[in-house]
Length: 338
Image (tube, rainbow, N blue to C red; front, side, top):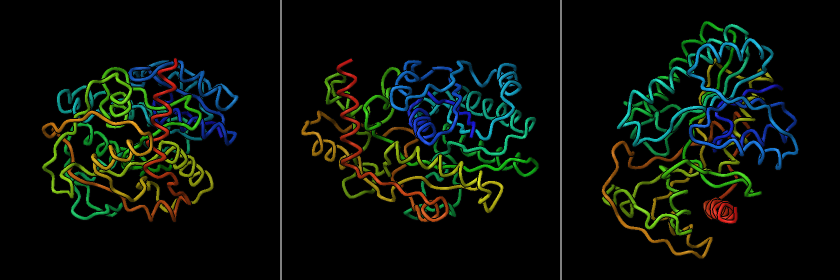
């Protein structure tokens, strides 16, 4: 298949491009490099032996996006990652998030409709569930009011896709990610945010490497066993494979609805302190951390019910928390050598 991957030089995008190319698919990447590096394309080529087509532009540019679709009207599917994703920043700069995350999606859906592109895999998030009533949270859980503008852009995007697909020829699968961490086993690609990391794991690895002085644990007064927030962490390669399973489900006409939603997690919840201990255990490195006040927009605890994805997509997360931590540290050490 010929697949467009938006945000394909980003963290999850690059790992998904690797999995696509390893399975023989032809990949085109569009990325504006706002939170990634063009050198990632070289690394993808090193891992897979094949260089994806790479176009640098912003998908909020309607004219450029329309021109791209005109030249690539034979796409078999799109995996749409391109979006801003920092919860805290979205609270401070909501319009930046609404403008970027929604306009880019609208321009993509215009192209899909015009050229009858059959399949969309959308990068959604467990943030759509807000603070869930029951754990683990399943796809049947109610969509709660979002706790951040970022989370709201994911909810609105899901609604836009459902409304558009209802009167269009394409199918869509919404993948609701839990917390992707870790890096490719080659240590050639991994999570490398520009500037200060917003996510826990790069902050852990950068603190262990001495780049950051200290890790802040935001809140130790949550209603959890050790007081710190609980998340479902999934290895990025496991997550990438879920996108291939979603694409193939639509290609083989196995979808049961025009738009389907699947949780993509491990089904296990780990607190921030448990993650820190898993890092220390798997790497032998001691972490300098302190307890800090809670962050605006953070959910107390959430982990996934994965039965639907396991049964319908034929996909299951394989790597455990220690393997995830070890791969993240291996990636950090490879960066240090560079």
